[in-house]
Image 1 (cartoon, helix red, strand yellow):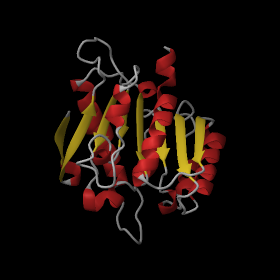
Image 2: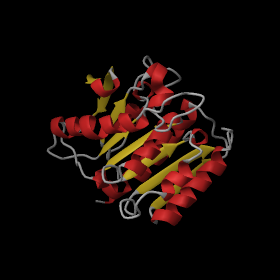
Image 3: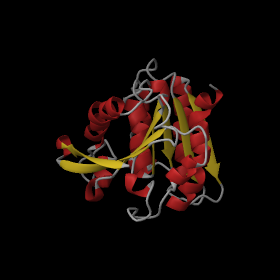
Length: 243
């Protein structure tokens, strides 16, 4: 299913996709929620701009699926919206405002209208490329909301100040978080080196749980991310599987 929301802070109307597990209608359970960027590419090849992840097909094939909320990107403002930092090349960063919309408007809406487990231990956020960058910042800026983060091929090269931003964060808020970093050696832009630097800093600074998954053949593409998603989702749901 999907709906749309008027995001007045950014003066846009945005489509929101909501995947519900197969047993949602017949159970009385509450479910963990994964928020994901670039909603156009997650569930429907007709709406995708560079390929579909087939997330609904995968989740339908397992017995521990939770709720997944896909947020369509802003099209022409995607790069700005997914970066909280101003850029000489791309202009003003809208990422902080975007994350406030997710935290203060979208999440309360989802928690009100669906049976969710609202705490940070059951709330995750993920995305790829620029979506991976803003998902990482979501965990960095809002650790009391997002207990798990999937930074998938994140565009860290567009955030040269990232390490210094990590160093300014309070340790207490992050030590219970989990981070999943993924990258492919065929992606370029020194991605693997940046992932190693950021993941090591997160462990050293906060002592949080970090997983670094490097694919020898991975490219910066929806097809690579589609293949990677089951690995990420199993990592994400391990606690729920065991319970």
